[in-house]
Length: 323
Image (tube, rainbow, N blue to C red; front, side):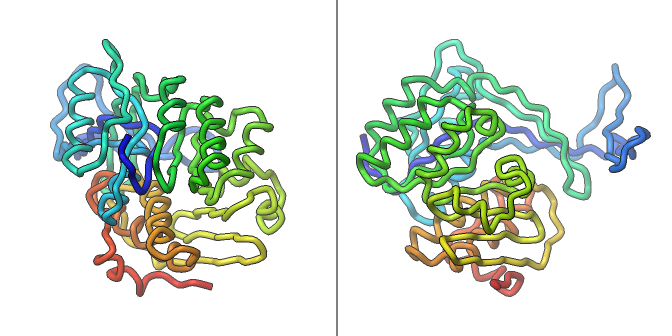
């Protein structure tokens, strides 16, 4: 197996972005405290699209793109089907010089796909077909066990506990650094497994809602003690909070006008780790790079189009403040 700088672990998918001015966006008539917007279109008709765009998606793929742009040797541990979408995914990653050796191609399997409907304000509705994306197995456990990588960047793995345990073992055996951005299935795991992961990670990425789900009403300043490494809580256009030991870093940003927020969390997390890899121990610099990457990413349609490299991060420096 090749020696790489970072290996991403998680889902990969074939994503299609669509926009249409012929689809009506309306406020929900339901009696709720928060009025949601709803998509309305006539059934049984053809609807003309104004925009259609296809790309490789999924958390593992999105993060791998940033690492590639920062000139890190990158590999992906995941799975797809042997269908046309799987071929599209593999070729797309290889075009970015991402190592696909660790991607399991499942015979007669159907690859994950998403259809993302966007409105003019950058809000979205996502139709998701998981396919084989969450079918992690002992095959992937063995890939982690044999992985020669400095960092493991872990996204959602469908709550597959043996894989997470193998990641912990990799840290214990080889001193691999672990960054973790858990998905919904991981929050449904037994608390003992979650606790072990929190004690193993070097950097944990969660958003505000996930922080409440994980820590309840416990203040973040106290909840950080449950995480052995850095706790990074993202707050969308309001920035992020970083807790490392007794140190607290607050990041505020001047918001940009987003076209598409798909992949913003992946852009922040992978940008943050790219910063730590370039500037070991400098969490302020990592926060700036992660924030800039996310801000640039949402300016374009798609989870990859606006991602930055080290030479372009400075474009957004004036919009980011560290406290």
